[in-house]
Length: 212
Image (cartoon, rainbow, N blue to C red; front, side, top):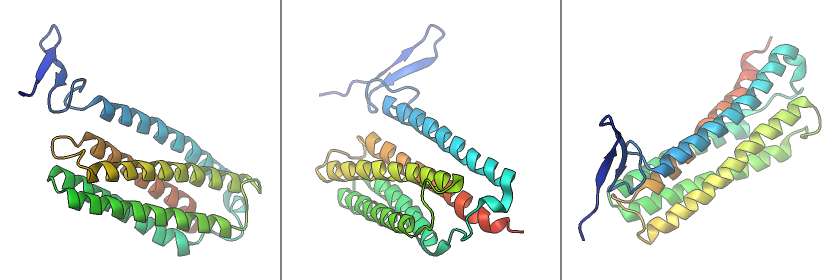
């Protein structure tokens, strides 16, 4: 069966809609799923910006007195950050393997991302339990647990996405021509990674950088 493909133009001759290898409904060469994901991530990024703005406002307004007596430690957060960055790299390798029709390699890299993400969650839960404050202790504790908890929720969603992609890749649902869901899922995981780097810098690095 021949593959159906084509382009829909507006009255001025500009390309507005394509269909074919990307599937009907793609816009400017990007699938509707890609655009929907980008819109979702932009919204989620804005929410994180609002939360982090609250942190910086409080930090500049109240200074050192606003921070807890025991500053955040890098003992757990440092290794967990390296682990999450590594998981983003392995996810990218998994996407590359799908593009190369290497099903075994793709599954291997995606499983590695799953395991690394799970380790990150475990370390984060351990760090939460070790904190000398709670979400209702003060404004700092409230912001810390709200922001890191919000991020943890995104990690959990990302792991579910990676799990689904791993299973579907293993059964041969994706290949070099049908890979949009994998690319979209990996983009989401990169977003989770990028957000954590911002959170890590805010709650861990800045508290040590701006000491009197």
